[in-house]
Every structure is written in C-alpha cells, then in structure tokens.
Image (cartoon, rainbow, N blue to C red):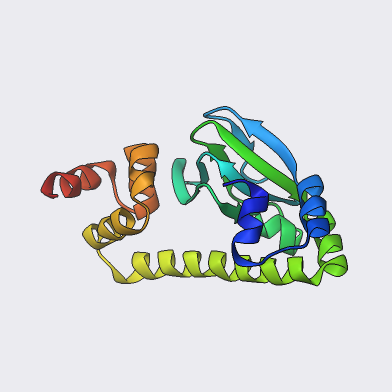
Length: 186
C-alpha cells in the first residue's frame, strides 16, 4: 500500500493534507542487504515502508541479534535518536529490495502543529508500535521457544518466508538449531 492510501485507511484526510503528506515524505529505495542505519549512529528520520522488509538488529558479545522486523505498511523510527537525542544502538538492514517514504522528525512536528489530524493519526501509530514491542517482550518473558515460534507463525507468517532462519532464530531468542527442531515437529 502506498503512503497516502495508508494514511486514509483510518482517517479521511483532506486533499490539502494528502498533498502536503505526499510532498513531505521523500522516496528512498534500497537494494537487498543495504544497511540503512548503522548501529551506534544518529538519525532523526521517520520511515514508512511501502515495499520490502527491514530488520532492526544489534550486536551482543560479537553476535548479530535481530531485535525486530518491519514490513509493508509500517511506520518506524530510531527512537533513541528521535526522542532522546542519543545515538541509536540498533542498525537497520533491508532484507529485500525496499521502498521507503521518509521524513525528518522536525518536519513531521511542523506538520503536527499545522494539521492536528496528522498528529492524531501518528498518536495511533505510536500506540500500535508500543503494543507490538510490548507483545514481543511478553512472549520473550512468559513463553517458551515453541510458543514464541507458534505466535510468529500466527501473527507474521510472511516473515518466515522472507527472512533467514538465523535472523528468525535470534529474533525469537533461540539458536538456529532449536528453531530447526521446532520446525521439524510442525
């Protein structure tokens, strides 16, 4: 879905608002395997994924760990940089050919002031993102590996077809060997 269709899915924006949004969000295209944000860097951009799959990752004890996946029709931003003015510990990688729509957070804030409907829309988007992270944390804390895999299979089956087993295993907090055993039982 393109950016303007996504915006108008929940709230019907005016023609002026749609034009402003279309002009304000610039298009960026990335090839598969491209690092969009380096770990421990600084970015104040807000991203909407029109096409493709992003992987948010970090390094722990020299290991590459997948923190989260973001696919089509999703907004995301490097939260530490945007909201806390700190370096972002996470890197972002395009796992597929990816088309993003991007706006600098300061420009988005200007839109919030001029167009309260856009601010209301992004408040809802923020709650959706917060909920997604809360659910992931709940599954990591209170569910075993098999339950985490079953949840991913139920909620995001396309991720299993689009990301490597190594990325999926680290996202679930398990080894690739454990993931293979779980998949073998299904």
